[in-house]
Image (cartoon, rainbow, N blue to C red; front, top):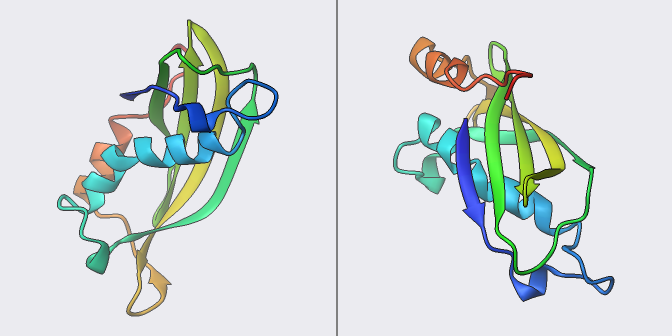
Length: 133
């Protein structure tokens, strides 16, 4: 598991006074940098090896401005060329949102998926989500 701590910005709030649902995709993407580095240590966007195939976010409780958010990042599935990143957003001890993102190891030159190598696959498996978390 990876942890990132985010302090919500005032601009992340909406007219109802809580964090807008549009903030979570940004927070989750930002917190996937640990995973991105497994595939591209220098994060070279000119040689980027991943694409996002699917994203889902479930909201369980409201999030608020002025209170730090703990984004927890796990892996919930690893296939031959794709994997699923599972993330949780916690605030004040409450799990407020969860998200699943399917990522594909991808070659932009050939426009085809690529097999995830043994070393990277092993690193991904070290961060598998457990229901006990």
